[in-house]
Amino acid sequence: MTEPQSALLLRRQLAELNKNPVEGFSAGLIDDNDLYRWEVLIIGPPDTLYEGGVFKAHLTFPKDYPLRPPKMKFITEIWHPNVDKNGDVCISILHEPGEDKYGYEKPEERWLPIHTVETIMISVISMLADPNGDSPANVDAAKEWREDRHGEFKRKVARCVRNSQETAFE
Image (cartoon, rainbow, N blue to C red):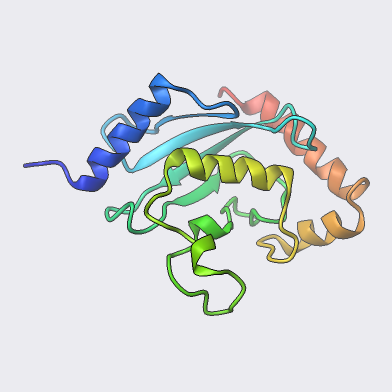
């Protein structure tokens, strides 16, 4: 039986990331026998509240990747407007392709088959540095980010960063 196109593409992307690592994250398979489930470690971007953190997340790819986007979920607790309380990441490029039924996102901001694990992770790192408070997945975090960024929001993020450092390599 031949390997599906999606598996070939994921295998190629994994090999490329292993050969030419990208600053800010590392990626690998959760299980060597499953190309559709990846674990990523994201280093909190410098000069942000997340600096020093080591955040673990999972990417789950659909069998028809790259036509449809993967799902991304932080395993490490993280307090962020664009990450819901269960850890699910909500950013435009991980939304299904096509028109946004709410009219908030342009089709070109949503998933396109040209995206790779690298472009996804660069977008997530950018999201950590610059949250989108207008379209939050975590309304409480977004409210704190807007109203008390240097108080309660900063304290909660600092706790997540400390916890991530303690649990990063478990």
